[in-house]
Length: 345
Image 1 (cartoon, rainbow, N blue to C red):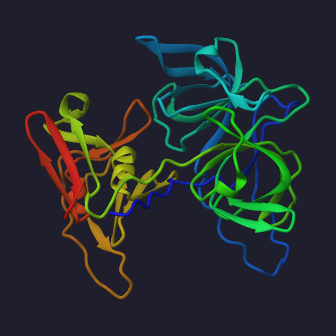
Image 2: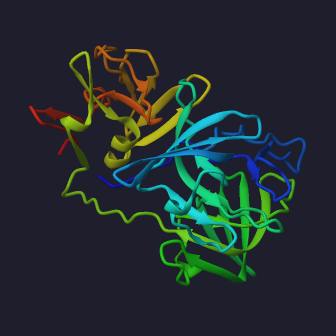
């Protein structure tokens, strides 16, 4: 199956992390240049930006697993760290060793919109930005949605089309991995970038100009039609509730090349394949999928699996493995030690 992963939500608000403010702010979507034209309805953000001063760092076997931080309003959040969490030195524009973070540091967190209802709340963190010089704004973090050449450089579309970033021809671009020079001709959809800007044109889409980028290339697609997408879990590392094996929804969806979106207000995740769609509501043990093929009619019989989708302490949503069979087109096999979810051949 051709990999077609679309991140859950996109950052529609332009986020300020200026040097004189104590915390990040969100700016409302700019007004369309033509007042009579209907601007598109803003989508929920792919990620949120939050400022916090570190109060605790939890490690297991020497590896950071979570960072607890308190904002200027004395609100505490636990940020779950994974091996994929990025950490950038904003002043130098280079990768920062996450182990250099310490209690008392003030940093910015780009984190998942999904957050637990616990006290304190918990969420997974995609990127951490530290070392913000007093005279330079902190790095902004975006996912590249489109790239086009212009007379003076390139233009990047991001934030679900809500922001154009113009990159000048003489801009400096480096790789996040090793700080080597990055050829902007290689920039593509799905790459993520750190960049710096202060002025944003109040138009729709909003516009900003930059001359410095740090690029995090998207993972290469290794799946082929001859090798159907699948993922296997050791049952010893999974949660079993009421004898029902549950799997992390985001990780599984990504491995299978499925689209996953999150509605924060209704706390519902929508899982989509090329032909089917299924809503997974937190706390609601009901599973049914419908066709997305134009002009076609088709819906599975609604069913229950004994466990409703839930948000775990790591900030991820978990669902019964069998939920993927309800989506249609996927087989779930389980033995005494392993559960495997795979696209049908």
